[in-house]
Amino acid sequence: MPSAPSVQEFAKSLGLKDPSLLHNQSLIGGKWVDAKSGRRFIVEDPSTGKLLCDAPEMDVEDADEAIAVALKAFDSFRKTTHRARARMLRKLNDLMIENREDIAKVIIAENGKPLWQSQELINVWRHTTACNLSFRDPSPFILPLTPQVAEGLAEVDYAATFIEWFSGEAERTYGATIPASNPANRIITIKQPIGVVAALCPWNLPIAMATRKVGAAIAAGCTTVVKPAGETPYSTLMLGELVSRAGIPDGVVNVLSSLETTPRLGEKFCVDPRVKKISLTGSTRVGKLLVKQSADTLKKLSLELGGNAPVIVYEDADLEKAAKGILVSKLRNGGQTCVSANRILVHRNIADALVKVMAGMIGSMVVGGGSDPKANIGPLISSRAVDKVKHHVEDAISGGAKVVWQYPSPLTGPQFSKGYFYPPTIVTGVNQSMQVWGEETFGPLAAITLFDSEQEAVKLANESKVGLGAYVFTKDMSKAMRTAEEIQTGMVGINTGMLSASESPFGGVNESGYGKEGSFMGIEEYLITKAITMDVS
Image 1 (cartoon, rainbow, N blue to C red):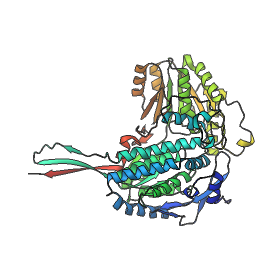
Image 2: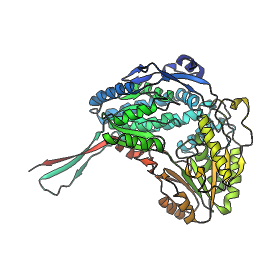
Image 3: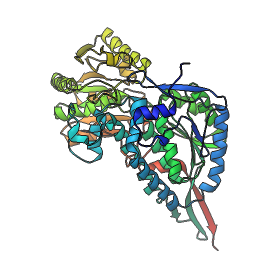
């Protein structure tokens, strides 16, 4: 294995204001530790292929220790008051905001995120109305921030909203008084934390998906073992450092890095009876595997799994708003989100016009990595991800689809030679026989299918085993509401390409999993309801 830069060299290369935030060890019981085996793995920048640093390859023995530590911490942490936990979370939120630029720089390095998503998302999260996707000059939006960290800043700000939100929910875990049929009885319910939680996080939004789980768990009084993706461990390890600085007791949040041993860790969490709940953001394949492995211990699971999001653009839609909404969903994080627009269903009469508007918008963007201050569309996470997009395009063409637009500049310059890039592409004539119809592309491919009626559009939208997110564009709100009610997904956006917010319940139906994250519902996933019946005669 080639040698990687030291953590000090990595921090220096990023220009961190506080290098002590960055760790390349795992966190167990408030201590930074290496794997018992001594094994390590190397993380690279998907924009450049540059080796960033290494991290410990934690294994089953390390997970066993982390679970034991989390269980011991739970004995006392579950007894802390709701207000005390709320204050801890508010302190953690403040620390995340104070250190947002350093965290952002790390996310940029390990994930390759570019600039454009941050600008669009910052506009949404700050409740502004700007929605311009042509960001060749970013200065009006984000000064005095440097462009290359703006996308990461958007994720950090987004991640912090979950900590802030659940700091409020910590004090709102209400029970109920229930009238009893027996006049001598009184029935009340109380909410109690479920116990030790394993939080399994993805690489596409590494710190936001961690805080969405950890914030709820802490608010409920649970302790956690967090497993970040091997591609993006450092931002989650930084979260562990901030947890300690926020005064959250040792052992409440433990962070285990791994790459090759990830399947073994997942199985360990499933079969170990001390772990009472697993929260996964990942693929449907992995979700099904965890369900099977958890059967003997009957764990509570919340599973946010794969999507195949349909977009319905009706004939009366505002084309510019529809194009912007589609591209916000389609190109955010290079198309690598579970709610990315995958099957774009467009009324036949406006398809050519919509493609023209979309092509004009994408054509004004710049493909590049996080270190490119002009970049709007970033890399994919790996060569395998690039190959999947290529295969989806080739399969569609072989089935009769047509490439009607592709990014005009060939991605052949030195800045692309070692990164994982694919040119944004628009394909029309997609049908149900093609792989792009039945699988998430997870890349910058806009696959368009034509329809003629509302009934046909809804029928096509529902031809999927998964059901996470969907989008509808129309000026007719009656039609929009009818469609939203009929689409078989857990979330629907009407005239918007954004579905996620800390106050909104996030989750799907069918093979997209079950359970909700975020919102007032999110904390319920980490609580049990206990009924207490008292004889007062």
